[in-house]
Image 1 (cartoon, one colour):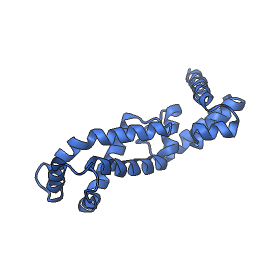
Image 2: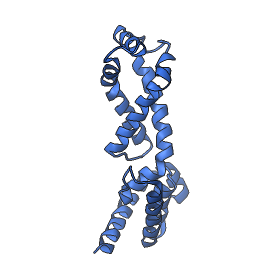
Image 3: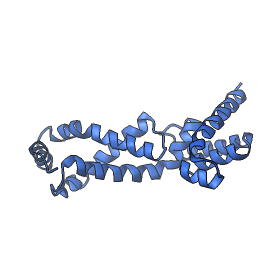
Length: 187
């Protein structure tokens, strides 16, 4: 599909810094960017908080305005603007998720805030490792591989020798045990 006249006009308005053009651009494409974020996270079995999603969307839009709309200036119109933005957003989101992979997955277990300083994250990681002492065998291996090493279900399946569709339920059971362990230690 070629570039529509509506998108061509919106793009020109942004590149010429017209009043309200950027806000119109964000309004038009925020849904697309959020869909890319959700789909990219789900396909990698990464759970994102609302704050994580908002941060990733901000990263995408920040990249688009950097260098005086450099990414938008490189768009040649060979496809629809939505297609181009999907590819650009996916690359940015995947790169950012890979940078944040371990902390984002640790948040599931330790409820790590996205704003915690790095030294807090390290102590929480150590807490997860300590809690893992309460798990045995395969459960401990699966939790360690998923939360601390950032492995996918497929990788865990081949490494541990269990069916891929058993990894999720094993993680759920182990998380429940870890939560009970944390709750009982706080009493």
